Amino acid sequence: MFLVITNVIILLMFGGGIYYFLNAYSYVDFYKRLETRAGIAARYNLDQDELTADAYKKIREQHLEKLSEEKEYIIKINPQLSVGGISEESKLPAELLQEIIDKGKSTYKNGNTFYAGQTYPQGKANYIVVVSAENYYSSHHLSFLRNILIIGLLLTLLVTSFTAYYFSRYIFEPIRQITQKVKTISAENFHLRLEEEENNHEIKELKLTFNDLLNRLETAFETQKNFISNASHELGTPLTSIIGEADVSLIKNREPEEYQESLKSILKQAERLDEIIKSLIFLAQTGYEGKRIPFETIRVDDILWAVKTVIDKLNPDNKIHFDFSLLPDDPRKLKIQGNRQLLHLAFANLLNNACKYSYNKPVTVSIGSSNSEVVIIIRDNGVGIPEDEIPFIYDPFFRASNTKYFEGYGIGLPLTRNILRLHQGTLQVTSVINSGTTVQVTIPLSFPK
Image 1 (cartoon, rainbow, N blue to C red):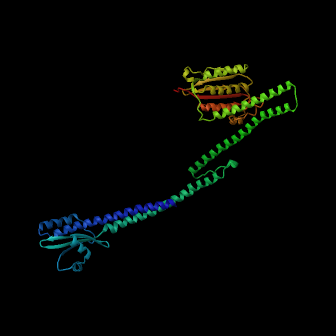
Image 2: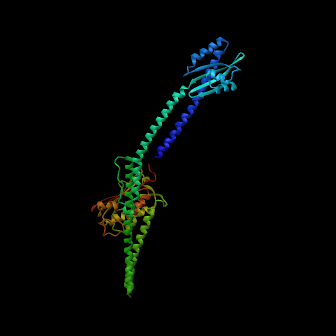
Image 3: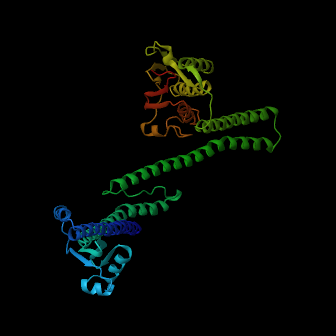
C-alpha cells in the first residue's frame, strides 16, 4: 500500500509540474503571437505608405495563420471620450484600454479569450490597436494533455496496485511465512524443514537453500552431541580406572609389589588420558583455520621416507613398500608448501592405520604428480570399513564396528583431514570390507605449471 501511495504522489507531482509549466508557457507564447499580429495590423491599417501597408498585409496573410475567433480593433483615441466610453463603443475591457493608454501596450485575458494591444501614433492622432483570439492550444492541447496525464495516472495506479498485490501475494507473504516458520525452529526441533514451493522458483530456491543450511546445522549439532558423548566416555574410562585403582590401594596396607602394580596401572591410564587430551587439543588447533602455522618448501617423498624410518623403529614387522613407477622425472613436481611436523603426523597416522588394521600385511605407497598437485595413494589389505560407516570416519571418536579389537581413539583420521585442509589438500578414503582400504591424498604443488 505504501508503494502505491508513493507512486501516486510522485506521478501527481510530476504530471502537475508538467501541466503547470506548459500552461504558463502557452499563455506567454500566445500573448507574443497576439502582440506580433497587433503590430502588423497597425501598419497595414494605419500606415500612410500604401506599398508598405500592402507588404505587411501580404506578410500577414501568407505567413501568419488565422487564430480561432481572431478579431482586430482599430480605435482612435479621442481625448474628450473617457476610457469607459471607448470600452462601451468597442466592447473591449476597460482595464485593458486603460493600461494600453498608460503604458503603451498591454495584455488581458477574459475566460479563454486573450487580448494584446498597443498604441500606434499616426500623424497627429493616436490609435489603439487590439487583436483578440481564443487560445486553441490552451483549450484543446492542454485539455488533451490533462486527459493523457489522468489516464496515465489511473493506469499507473492500476499497474502499481496489481504489482503490489502480486508481490504481497507471491513474494512478501511467502517470506513472512518463512520468517514465522524459522522462528519456531530451535535446538529441540532441528528436524523441522520449510515446505518447498512448487509455483515460485525464487522462493523455492530460498527454501531449498535454507533447508540445506538446516541439514548442515543439524549434522553439526548431532556431531557435536556425539563428540561430547564420546569424549566424556573416552575421558571418563581412564579417570574411573585411576580413581578405582587408587581407592583399592588405599583401603589397606599392601606389599610394595602390589603398590608398584597399582602405580603401573595408574600410570598406563594416565598416559592414555594424556594422549587423548593432547589429541583433542591438537585436533581443535588444526581445525582453526585462522591459526598461523609456519610453512616451508618441502618434498613429499622426503616426508614419507622420514615417516617410514620412524615406523620401522616402532613397528619392525611392518611391510610398507614404495611404488616408484609413477614418480615424476621433474623433482619440482614433488615440492609443496607445508609444515613438516604436521605433514609427518598426518602421514604417520595413515601408514600406522594401514599397518595396524591389516595385521602388518603389505602396504603399498605410490607417489605421483600432475601439473598442479602431488598425489599419494596408500593401499592396504586389511579388514576394511563397512560401506555404510564410511561417511562417519571423520567424526571424532568414531570407530568402525569391525575395529573393536584394535587399540585406538578415533581421532587420527579427523586430525589428518584437518592437517591436509590447512595445506589446501584433500583426503579420499575408499574401502571394501575384508579386502582393504585405499587412501588418496592430494596436495597443491609449490610451483604448478
